[in-house]
Amino acid sequence: MKKFIAFAFIILYFTLVCIFLTEKTDVLALKNIPWNIQFKNAAIISWQRFPYPCYYEIDIFAKNPDSLTDDSPYHLLKRDFSFDNEYKLPPAVTPVYYQIKAHGMFGMIGTPSPLTGNPRFTANPLKPILLTDYTQKSPASQRPFLTWHTVPNAVSYELEILSGLPDNPNGTKLSTSNHLYSTHEIFTHGCQVDLSPYSDSPKLYWRIRALDVHGNPIGIFSDARQIYVDKHASSPQKPLIDSYDTLPDAQVPLYPVYHWIPLLNVKRYEVEILDHPPAAQNTTSPSRNRLEALTVYNLFSCYDPKPYIKPGTYYWRVRGIDDADNTIGTWSDTQEMHILPPAERSVDVATFGDSITHGGGNISYSPANIEYSYQTYLDFPTINLGRSGDTSHTSLERFDHDVLPFKPRNLLILCGSNSLRDESISAQMIIDDLAAIRIKCEQNNIRPVFMTLPPLNPANIQSTFNVTTDPAWWEKQQQVNMYIRTLPYYIDLTPYLTDSSGQLSEKYSPDGLHPDLLGKQIMGTVVNQHKNLFIWSESTP
Image (cartoon, rainbow, N blue to C red; front, side):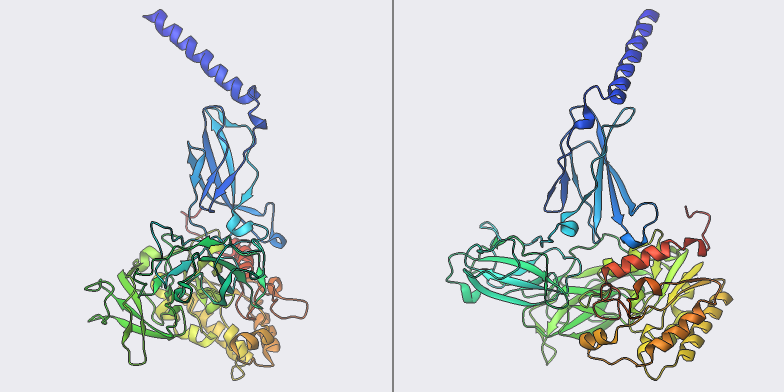
């Protein structure tokens, strides 16, 4: 028996030695195996399987703006493992890059794959990826919803309906043949379209291209996709909740924003908030004992003016309404909103201020699109206490109610941009408000970390929002930022977003006020470089 055990150990030893030498000497030439990375609809990544028993490490990276990089522009977001040569990608709302590594018993074998960007964000040129697919087995009605993945920085989209394949696939212009209809008045990554005028066409196709703030194409048209239509199928009668391109379990900001894809030709919507599920789904009548009802016009999102501090599960739904408050169609499906107790939502850093903090940008994006929140790009968790529309004074007024329940160790403060625009508000008034916020922080053992105010671009604000800007905004900004730079804890954000004329660079903000996707990435990167300003708990790595 002892001889058998000894023999078994010898066999095991030599087996391990052989495995070790195989993996470390590259006797199988594993270093020369091409990865051949492929993407399926930007949702699944696959690669060539190694001819050797191994498992795979999948690293997912974000890329910081090139001008602000330190040692490496890539920042690890997530690491996962698989025994298969295919991996279902987690939802992503920001440009991400992937690297695959093969591991044997004694560590990595071969060489890592090259960093490969998700084509949804990094293809050159960008091409929209369609989501909706109406097939012969599952045809559309004559008024279907069409949806596609969001294209980064797209302000609007142009939809083209065709009777056949386009004569210029992968182009930027409408088709000269087979063209039936087009519109560029789409400001969400989905729409409801009326196909009934084309019911006699034997075939129908659709495609999408993204447009910037000036109506110029971002990239090229999507691939054209055929729509199979059943003339007798019932058309959707309820707004479509926009749950696409969202991150699961994303923390709800203190002031929630509700987002949907609108019904065709409906100009007015009502959002209903409840603390219990409605008695029935997709009905036409308001619920009894609802907490609030919010009305918006010609929109696809709704900003809740109420902060959600009380914990619990809340519910919201939206309906189209006419001038007599009658439901157009039915209520949408009901969505849940989970609000944790303040103690469970509390983190080392809370962010506080106006819409630049609340999120959104590039005209068409609200804080529901968290890729337009700078907090998304921070290396540490935060709670978003921003509120769109705040002046420096309204931020001060809500401080006790909105900040103190969460007991943050640090408060990252950016407020006063709306005050710069207002001729009735002086620089000293803004400074007084910021000083009062600082005092409140110190009285409650919170470290106030102020960010300097970004500049404005009055011409772009006028063209986008049709509002004027105080001609003295620049002088006011200089005075306020001089004060902020005298404080013990501040982050000088201004130089990174300013163009050669001293205004907010259009490269970072088409609307002249809110930093866009790249602008929010820059903000996150700048804050990450100043992490030493914050007080951290012992559990923070």
